[in-house]
Image 1 (cartoon, rainbow, N blue to C red):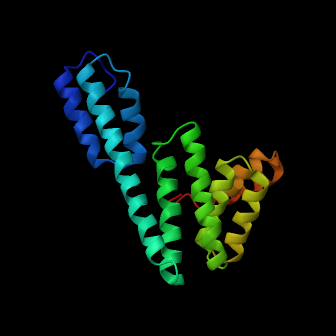
Image 2: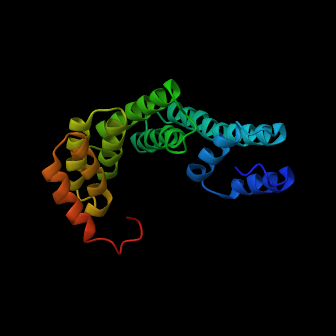
Length: 193
């Protein structure tokens, strides 16, 4: 995609292939194509990024309606709150929201996560999300507490320790970061890690 010596049609076919790739991988490539010398390539990249964002925003609208419709039923409410948190996080994760929009998406995801935590305070995955959001918003101390709560509630260490290591590094607790990194070394065979 970045090689301007390759014919535009071949580069456009490569870009069209990005629709079958995860948004997290495709989005940065599409964003870089927005400054391509070929107008056709720029327009295609813009359209594809716009479609990725529209799909998530439509899902947000749908889930907001579901949240309002199921406001009294706590199980449905919890599901909608978690889904809304996921969708706003997805805008950030796929790098579709940047700058002030990124901060807004992080804050909205955090708001829905906190509301979900009020309904399900023992849900380890919500505490992990809470930590990720706090870390992304620049609050490593609170993020660390959320990660530790996720661990205490039974979240597998393999899911939490990488973030804990990152947050302890951000807090300049290098000895603890070193200890956590040694723990990570024992899990090299885990594909997710």
